[in-house]
Length: 256
Image 1 (tube, one colour):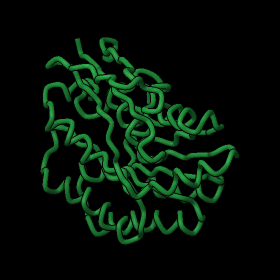
Image 2 (image 1 turned 120 degrees about the vertical axis):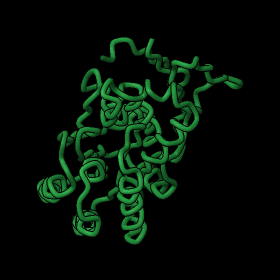
Image 3 (image 1 turned 135 degrees about the vertical axis):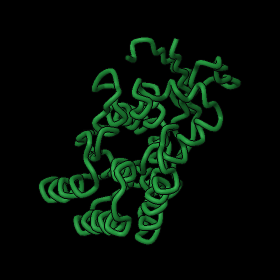
């Protein structure tokens, strides 16, 4: 399914890139991931992490996007790619990235596992990917909002830094207004609780609006889950958000 993808790493980090280096131009069948920042609210994480040298432990928890359905291997999932970028961005600092993604889960199921993980282990950061399956399946929006608030409260009680990764955008969304209501609900609850949201929905919508044809190379064959290129771009943008815009990676993926 993904064997035809080519990913070319044009530059690893802005501080290492030669002056005047230009991003490669994409053909109509290619997806180009240009650097962007998913949130500015997580900028304080960079200053906190740069001040120490102790190993960092990060939990990525969620459903299929965290597990990596659609990726060609475990090393191509967004948590694996993100771990590599953070290690490089922090000068080789030891980072344990725990991938706790289970495909098909909805918010109530993941919330139970999140609470258990916060009790059982110590994490310097939790990235909670939530909302996609809830938005697809529908349900009571008020109940969903309460679940998000409950997860935030659990992280605060455990004194664990939390960022939320919201649902993905994909062209086949049905009942767009309902789907977007879940995205907005996450943003609203998180804003009220002063928790950063990594807005994957807005980022992917921007990819699609910029190049609808090329965007399909960021998705797997089912046109729902992300491909290696999509996960790589997501990891790059999360790393920029967590490290204060430090990584400047340009990825080009082709479906040819």
